[in-house]
Length: 286
Image (tube, rainbow, N blue to C red; front, side, top):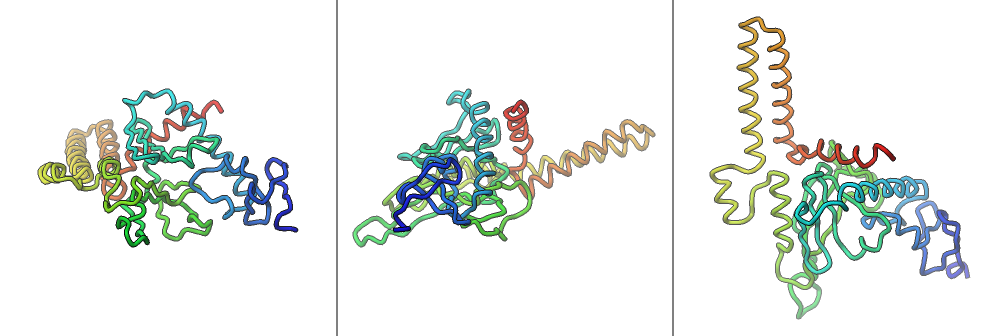
């Protein structure tokens, strides 16, 4: 009797039947309508009411960010890669991307992910158990984020320092179903390789990078040149006893050192200021 009895949603107070609710970690319940206020990329039942209350407020801010910074843009200002119903929408001008999927479309709030929250990305495949089917039942791109919790709601010991996503640790974007291709979503991954300074996986790209270097290598080289230039300016100002010139040169040297660190350890961090500015514009009047 208890299993099939109606329970009250701890968010809206409405009754929810067995098929229209989820039990939370603290034994409260959330109805399917209130769960639509949560991200498509977390499992509500892994968390408690307090956690989800904070998360829903976060999602409201995400929706405001989307409406003010993404909705006004035309398609020429986005890089969209879609196969079937799934894909990814890159918005380099704000240093963020949107994941596209049917379950995302059912949510009440739009959601964006910052480039500098990304920890790693790679192809993934799911082996096909069917004897006469294709090699993989699903193939696409897996993106991991720096996040203090994993997808099960436990503390994430693999999360590195730097910008973290507060709620989502991993998402999978299935670009193909029932396929033999282990590199589905290659165009989207190529765009991510470029964003994060990774080596190209295409023949043409590899040939070009053999002469120019990867994005990371180019950024490191540029930062090195700027460092040498700043050191020269510092020495010149010291010889001329130019205190203002010395301070300017020190500032240039500090900026060059920061660029070198970003290029070496986190190429995507160059989008941090871009994303920060977008969030400030969207939220400063809220």
